[in-house]
Image (cartoon, rainbow, N blue to C red; front, side, top):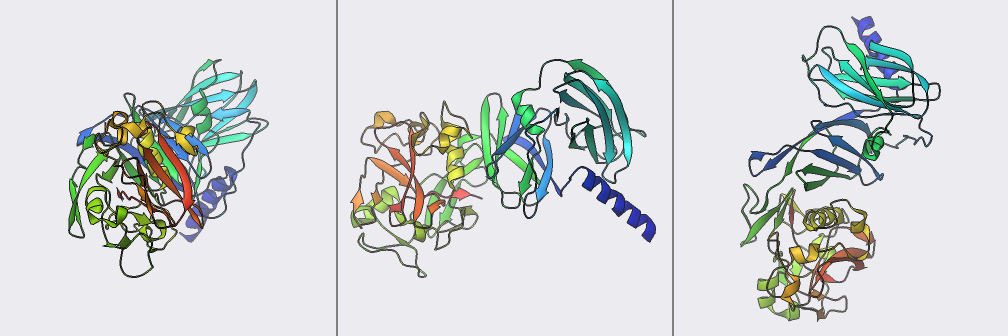
Length: 443
């Protein structure tokens, strides 16, 4: 028994070594619209930390990738001679298709193994430049490694089969040749996708020209549900009572937000700086509590963060909620903008950016020029102004400014601004002494 176990472990070690496999993580996706199932057309998975991305296409709803704990030693290969698309469907029940692209005529050796390194099927032939399709008939295993080797390099992907969904013997069948190269997004998928511990992922689901996005840093296998409902109270959480005050919620695709600015804590005068003590301290515009009742409190960045520098911290939000990061604000603005999608490079430009996200998020009343406000998603941004680092107040009725939980550097933090005369949004940074409005986002 010990010898058998040793051989199994040795075989697993060999196949891991042969294909540079690291610990794997599996994430699955589905979509919902307030309780109703929604079919997904495609899913974009972008590692924001490493600036790499890939796309799953329907009916593929599962993604298996390398999860690296420690220093990432994945090296890019700029001279790819062979590309393998992720198999589809994935996971699969009995059969799945893999597309392979060759830059030149090559002799290709294809091998399919289980995770113990046992070869289950193979194909060896000289193939012409272009696309080649293969159908794999699986056995009873859950995971398979599809590797293709030429004289210059080897590429491999992992495939996930449904347990018990295959046949007795595995089989790989050549399914045809085409000259057209795989599209660019599929090309990205085959270059190798890994996640280091702590990496931030942007996940975007697409269905009938509508997109829904999430930000997460997974640490284990996980299932994600893209929410396509919007303009409704968050399902199951229509209101939140916090510190004696009731807040409404608003669902905007996969994000559940406070509909009103946070108004918690004890008021201090404008010239005073908030202190690290056991009391949440807020400013009311012009030191008038009526303004806090209308626009919510204004908070120094360190106070709203409760004196931590951890992005996405709970801070002064209630339990189960947190201070949104820059990336989560980007998802919101990308979801509501009519021109720039979630994940577009436009959202990473300092200054005014986007097209009409500001107009679509601003309340239709209270602004100096309400013609630039549409509030299409019932988010209802109000122009509460801000407290400056010198202790005075500015631009009520003209600007609504929010403090994300993201730092520019140790002394400066980012802020998001909505302006009366503009339909786009504004993103920049300032010293931490300013006081801004706060919206909480559900975990």
